[in-house]
Length: 389
Image (cartoon, rainbow, N blue to C red):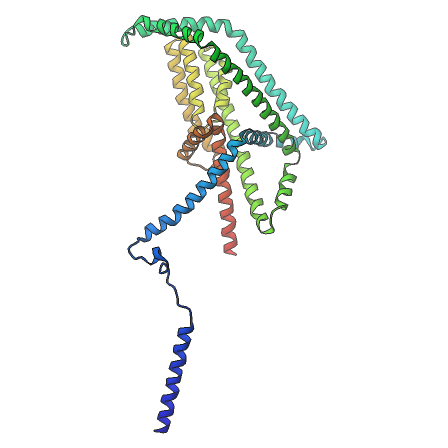
């Protein structure tokens, strides 16, 4: 009996010690068992997940709004830096090639001066073409308006002959009545011209240093960051620059191809101002999916007024053909390696950029979204590699 009592006492002591140890341990909290929202079994897990993503999206939206608000306050500087980056993406290879035989500053100067002379020469050629065809164009345009008026008066429209004359009278009355307003608008336009020249000069100034030593400037910037962030920032910068240069080279090639096709087609159809309209197509192509149809729509109006409905219909058919070539041939083969965005995303991005900042926003939106997506993909790949190791 004594031994049994001793064993029972020992077992009782062990049980008491185990209970004390268990009571001393912190309580294990099961997932979603703490907190009012997580502990409520009536809240769906899907709703909890949506709520978790919702506040994150709100934070991202607030940060994005703050960034765009800051860019809106200093949009001239942002545009100048963007133009400097575009010039760097286009002229850096030429400057590197010239630097093999010339000192680096001289190579940069030759690349910039040569490109400026080329642009001025093209503009002078276009201006001479417009001046040489201006009188003939005005005459043909007036005759074309008369033909359009006669066409509208015939079936099936049967428009009242006095409608167009009344419209012309109203336009003349409006111009004479609002002369002061028009003069004020012209003065504000002159102020905008000064702002454009200032932005262009600042962009040229930035491009000089970007082309000459942009890589060293980026290296210096990375060295100012904390050590843990340097590698990620370098990786993001390389991906961003690779995507930006690829987009710039691709969009210039697409715009030049469209302009050549449009110029040849308009010249073959005998449409006046074929060269200026081709140049308009070149600049309009920098707005993906939207710019080319708008520029060709202007060409169709000129063709309708000068050559009649048949030639205008051929120009409209040209819009469809060039749109198919651009959408199914040029963009997939030329820009797919640089811009990996779905066409729907591109269209929504262009419209959002145009709504936010007009023509400048439409031009900048697609490369900006492409760069952000490329940076995200590169950082994600770097994170996966680190996790694998």
